[in-house]
Image (cartoon, rainbow, N blue to C red; front, side, top):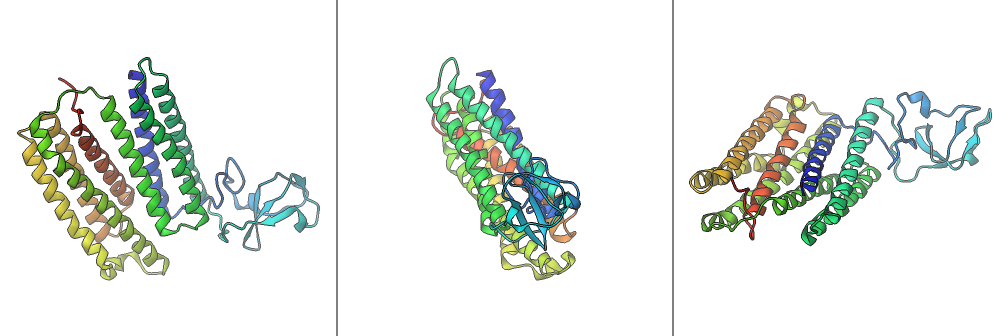
Length: 341
């Protein structure tokens, strides 16, 4: 069981690293750094110079490699060596989209994001195999780990659709939501693996409020994703970020005001749990700390022109908050309870 628990914690860590990397991709506008999938410009290791993506005479090309020609992507149809004159029969137009720009920084930021995603897939597979070959097999562990494995594969497919759609906002939101689903499943597995004991009546009374707090966090994340999209559109239209707050949509004010409700509900839970369980009270100290950091980074982004790293920190803290709350909800359902001291 210790092996499965180790792999579970390692998988959670890597998933959060993927969320951080995704936030950096979003912050730097690197989402189209690799315009194809799963390779990057047709390479397993992407180029570092624009010259690599230019057509050149007497050069060896492999099937699937990409060049940028006349501001369009073209893909090699077969392995061949180019002649002194460009031969269009060797190439076919890339039809998934018409985005054909190369920025080495964007490319490598997106590439690292994909590498972390692949690493998450390997850890997820190892976790599933570990539950499958436990000395005392637990069917529920196997099912949950299997769902996580399926989820990571679905998340990879979603990532591909995000690229093919040239960063469609709805698909970006779905991509983020799927990451939270994976976090919730992993914390559910953690709650299942952790030691069980009969649940106290006091904790049962708080379950509905814990679920409410978790739901509010999820809604707030959705609001935040939509607000971020409005910021991206504002910048894409050529407006200076310094003036965004003056032109913020109504959703921004809803998102900002909703944080008061999130803080209030979790503050009440914090007060109630302090007399119920030292374990849960300790966790809720973490929850409140994360909420205060989340509010602070939100204020920094809104009024100080998105300081460096504030956006990925805001997203990662929200994901951590969701994960901790999900774990507490799982621990208060059924027979699940914290470790015995």
